Image 1: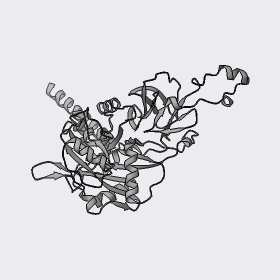
Image 2: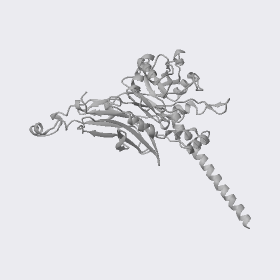
Image 3: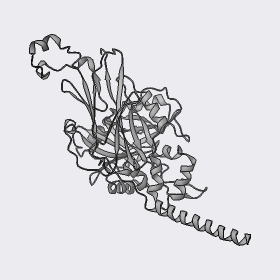
Image 4: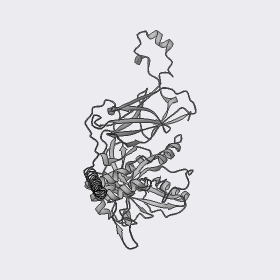
Length: 433
């Protein structure tokens, strides 16, 4: 009798486990998180008009340790609606010398270079001559001579980390690096990625969208007066995993990694269609922090803006420096006071100086609740929920203080929160130049 009950109980347990596995399979198979974007009318957005282009920066090809040919990857990027593409093969600029740079039915491709230094890998964007591996000082000097942008690669990647966080002179940091995102995951998530990739690659790769807190802390700590460091997202795609001595597999696919995260560059006008001119525009925008980055796998951002306006009507964008000592206060005509005589006696023009920070995005807050979070020097100071962010700054009494402001956007899918988008900084300071 006991054996009979044991057999029945074991079968019930097995059936229960089987049902759970089937439910888990279908949850993974049909898992998809997409942000619902809408056309929102925003008076504040009209203040800040820049041309936005989205790009995939830092990936490897058959010119170094990647598995993809550039012609194939250009086709893939076009299908994914990217506007520009920057390769970064190790210690070589050969794709450029082979004449591959240019426009391909609207998509602009040019070659960068990932260079080995004693401190780690360093990304050069916008250079024309190949730079040999060498000391950080020499590599940086050569990048500067060519008016390129020098960016620290995957600073906290345990496999190839950056080894000297006190160096100076670089232009930016890879905040999102998908290779680091993978290597920095909890081991349980790594297992989940491996076992679910074949079922649904989106489910597997959405684990890469975690917030790289350690790298962001480093990024915030190195912002200096009139020397801000740009943050970007990079694919660092190889699609070339070594399984055995002789066998490699194309994992993850370029098409999948190209979809996960991108850098969005903000230009003063539309690209000209000329290789040299547009390469320079994109490079300068990256150097100057005129960009933001996001996890585009959940949807390419629509309608995002981040900027500031001072009381004298001047407009500023990420990468800009605002000297509060040079801001003019509102005129008496703008006070709306009836007694102009009282206004002349009582108005303290310093009190009337201000800077208002604006940010917004065209997300449908009913379907995807979201928060726009404003950070000052790395600490969150204000949030707006499901609406544009407006924040006034009027305390300019700290003569030697530099404050750096940026935004992050959190999007909620039920109980799940994704920090979806990161802007670069605007500095506001009170110093005599």
